[in-house]
Length: 409
Image (cartoon, rainbow, N blue to C red):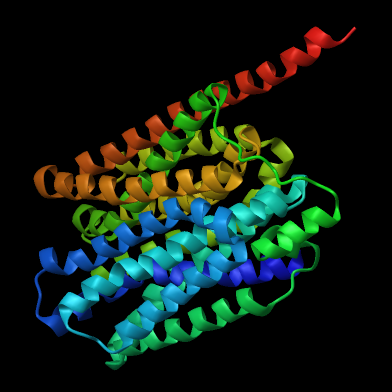
C-alpha cells in the first residue's frame, strides 16, 4: 500500500502542476501568439472540456480495461500533450491539444482518488486521501511560483518539457511498478479475472445506483459543485479583492494568494486524521460553518492585514473538505467508488468553471463587496447541502438496518 500511495502522491503532484499550468502561463502565451484575453481563455476552456470528458469516461474505461491500463493511457495522453505544447505549434493546434491534456489529468485524478479510497484501511481512508491532496496542493503552489521565475528569466517555454518529463516518469511507474496485493485490484483485467478464478469466485455483478441512494447522491453532487466553485472564485479573484479594497500592490496581493495555498497544504497534513477521529459528517459540517464565518468576516473587513489573516484561516478550514467529502460520499454509497468519485469530481469541475465566471461579471458590474457576498452566499448554500447530505446519509444507514431488525428474533 505504501508504494501505491507514493506513486499516487506523485500523480497528484503532477495533476496539481498540470491543472494550473494554463493560468500560470496565460500571459506569456497571449503575448507570444498576439491574442486578446477572450481568445486566449479558449485554451483554458478547451482543457476544461477534456478534463470533464476524462473524469466521466474513467469508470467506463476501468470497467473494460482495468485501472492500471487506464492510468497508463491517461498519463500517456498528458505526456503527449505536454510534449506537443513544448514545440509551441500554431494557435489552432494548441487548442486541439488542450482537451488531450485535460483528458489525461482529469481521468488520472478520478481513478487515483477512487483507488486510494477503495483500497485504504477503513480508519485511514480520509487521512490517505488528504495525504494525496497535500501533493495536489504542493503542485498547485509550485507551478505559479516556478512559472513566474521562468517568465522572469525569459525561459517560460521550459515549463512544458519539464512537465513532459514528470508525466512520462509517472506513466512508466504505473506501467511497471508492482504494488503487491493491490495488483489484483488495480492490475490488468486478465490478471484480475485469473485471480478471481483461482479463488473460485464468480465475476462480480455490475452495481447500479438505486432509489435509496439518490437523495444523498444529489446533495453530494451539489456540495462538490458549490465547494469547488467557491474555492476557485475566491482564489482567482483574491489578488483583485486585496488591490481594490486595500490599495495593496500587485506583488503583495499575489503573495497572499500563495499564503492561501500554503495554509491549504498545511491543513491537509492534519485534516484526514482529524476527520477519521471525529467522523466525516461532523468534520465537514464544522468546516462548512467555519467557511461561512470566514467569508462573512472577509466581506466586512477592509484592511490588508485583516483580509490576510482571514485568508490564512480560510485555507486551514477548507483544506480537507474535498478529500474528506469524497471519502464520506463513498462511505454512504458502497460498491460504486469509481463512478461516485467521477461524478463528484466532475461536479466540482463544473462549479469551478461556472461560478468564477459569475464572480467575474459581478466584479466588473458591482465591485468587490458584491462578489465577496456572493462567495459568502455560496458558503451558506454549501452548509445547507452538507446538512441535507448528513440527513440523507443517516436515513440511508437506518434504512439498511431496518430489514435486520425485522428478521431478528
